[in-house]
Image 1: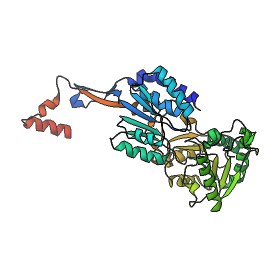
Image 2: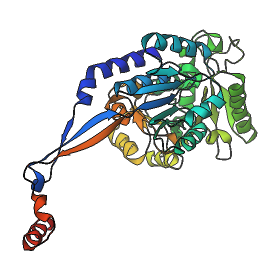
Image 3: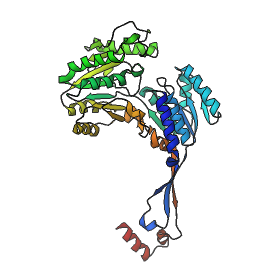
Image 4: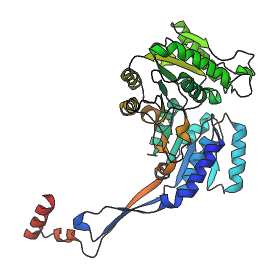
Length: 402
């Protein structure tokens, strides 16, 4: 999850960078055909990168290498929650690049706030929507353009009668990798009402198969700190107090770590519950039911636009219905989270889940200035329209405007 995607992204940029940098010829209006038009891409200048704690290598270095590929210099502010990785990144980058090309800035939230207020030529932030508001506000002081990779409640729809063992295995992978602390993890599931009981059984079995030792196994990841664990337990307590059913799933067993939270499903969630609105970012899966695909689409559209969307089902008409009827970041069909591993796809959110995208050529262009250039030819019909005006100018205008 950290290294494979990063290495693949670097290799992709290395292979395709010359093509990305190539000037693009553009259309010229017929009455100006003696001239030519093109777009050239040039570096923006200095790009700031603010990285989160949950994937402290790939979510720090992928924006950095994309900014470098576009010719920029970079200042990187990693999360204060990952000091060991931060020291390693600083050591590696410091050995490869001078500090005036890539600089690593360590510090707490106060340093992060000061960092976001610097007059960068572009600022990339990956993190929560709440902090994203503050980053965008700080950047606006200097009119710094931003790319915000935020979170949101990413849904997964399971089509009626779709093989539930297939869907459950994929949802377990996407939901529980890194203990659910993944920005594109499925936040909640929409299951047909006729399949609910069978889905719960299948999901429980899939969790047991993936983590046969339960929360005591070495493959299972614990919650990052006590504050986040308290937040997750608070979501469950609030939901239970307001009438939801909370079920632990998978193997029982002694927790290997005090913060190794057992996978959980929540049923009967209503809009009065905090878990219905806040991004979960942990091993908890609310499960809702629907009767028609259109009802599931309406459920998603009634909420802020998610960073990712997942659909399990082989009916192409229904796939198309979901794709056309929803607005989200990227989509994986019959799987979860693997859209982020596609080097030639842009990655980003929309609305409350983010602004802008990187990865692929979109990342290069996002962190470049597209300079339009028009080279006027020796003869140009517009010279006939210069003052003083006369009948010839009137005739030319009448032809062009008609």
